[in-house]
Length: 392
Image (tube, rainbow, N blue to C red; front, top):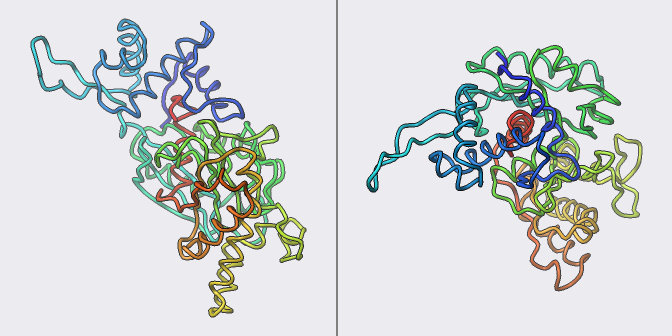
C-alpha cells in the first residue's frame, strides 16, 4: 500500500527528492518563496516533531516560530494524512486545560530499505519511521558483474519485503554502490555491472511505490548524521566489497556536481604498483582495502595480520589526508567488519593522517568506528523520510 497524496504533497515530494544535492542543507530553516511556504512549513513541523518527540501545539508554535493558527491547520492536515497523531494530555502543572500532546505516528507507516554494498549478499529490511528494523531479509549476490542478474536479485528481495510489511509503505530506499545521480540513475558501478542504469525508475515501475536511490556510503553518512549524533563536518568511509565515502560538511550532504564526491575507492595510493582493481588500474585504494582481499591475505598469512592491517590503515589515510585538509573535517567514521577495522587499523590510520596534515591544526581529528547497526539500511530510511516528508 502506498501513502495517499494530494497534489500539493506530490509537489513537496518532488522538491525534497533533491534534498541531498550539493548545496541543500539537511536541516534548513531559511525563509523560502511564498509559493513554497506551505510545503516548507509542513516539513518544518515534521522535522521538529521527529527530533523533539511528543509536544503540544503551543510548544510546536514556539519552537518553529509559526503562528498557532498555522500550526493548528498543519497539524489537522497531518493527522488527516495519518502521519501525525494525538497521544493524550500532558500532566497538569498549573491552572487551565492540560495540553494535548502530538507526535509523528512512528509505527503508522513503514519503509523498505535495501543495502547493495555487501560482498556476498544484498540485505534488506522493513523499518519503522525511526529506522528500527521490523523484519530483515537477504538474498545472495549474483556472481560476476551481470547487471541484469543484479537487478533481478535486488527486485526479488524488495518484493519479498513488500509482501511481509503490515503497514502502508512510505517508500523504498536503495543504497547502491557506485556513482548515483539525483534521478536515481547509477552512472557507474563496475562492481554491480551497471553503467547508466535507471535503477530508481525501473524499480518504481516494478513495485508501484515511491523509490529513492543513493550511493551506499552517502546513505550511511546520512544515518550517522541523523541517528548517530555525528558532528556537522565528517566523512564516513564504508569498507566492503569496495570502498566509498559519504561527506557531510556544514550540516550538508556533499555529493558534487558529478555526484561523485566521496568516490575515493579508485584513487591510486602509493607509487609501488599494487593489486589489480576491478576498474583496470593497479593500486587503487579499493583494491588494497576491500574486505575480500584483506580477509584472504590474513587467512593466507595469519602471522602477518598486524602488518597487513597497518598497511591498509596507512593507505586509507594517504587517500583521505588531502580531503581532510581541504574540507577541514572534524571526524572520520568507519563502517565495515570490526575484525578488520580494529585498533591496529585505526591506530595506523591516525598516525599516518597526523603525519600528512598540518601539525597543530588537525591533531584533534578522530577516526572511529560507527556504532550504528545496519547503517546503510537506516540511511535508506533517512533518504525516504527526506524525500517523502522533508525529515532528516
